[in-house]
Length: 279
Image (cartoon, rainbow, N blue to C red; front, side, top):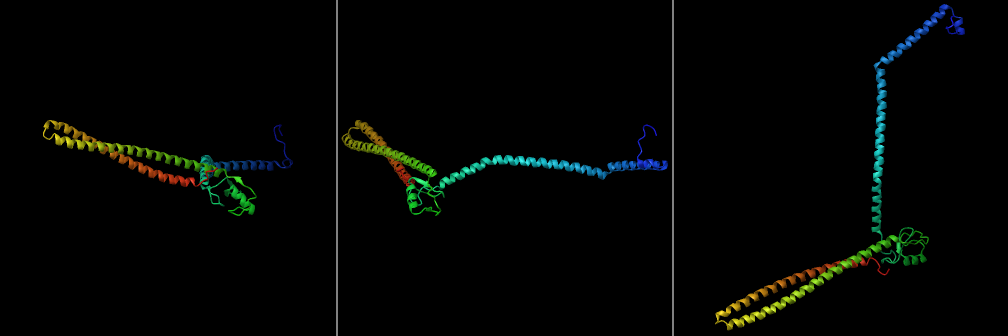
């Protein structure tokens, strides 16, 4: 045995040269068959297709994962975009709740005087609530225990203040309309008076023309004066008629404005009755 030969196992030491040769040939044959099978697998189209399918599945999985990631991102963006909308709806809901707030006590059925709110969100005048609590510790509306808890109804107070402001604005508008109608009536009356004075002047001129015309009937040279007097009379009569028409129109507008102011004042009174004015 040379220096480069591998050490033999105990089994190989007891083998004959012929057995050892056959064993080596068997190992070589096994190695050759294994290589052949590996090459066949590499050359097998089905095996290659199988590998391609695996690659394709991986690509599809990555694509689906990417699409899913995009969808999640969009949903997150939508969620961010929907938050202001949700806040807006919440604000609108609060506005509706403010509109639904009562302006009258459930006990005395009159506009609130120093309004309070209970734990069960029912509203009363403070005096009415305390008086009822002396006889019954439960809520007047829902009969739940109040536990003596009465809190100032801030929202109701704000609504009352808004109603007062609205009523004051309506009354101010009515006052403006009434003042406007009064001015128009005053101007119309002045125009009517002036028109009446012009009518009197025209009547005087008519008498003068009749008298002067009878005296100058035989003197044609004086007819020019009569013609001028008649023309002046016609102009004065036209002015009086125009002023009278304007006065009538102004009176009509003033009357319409007064009626509008009366209707607006009735509405203002309805608003004013919803709240108490002795704070």
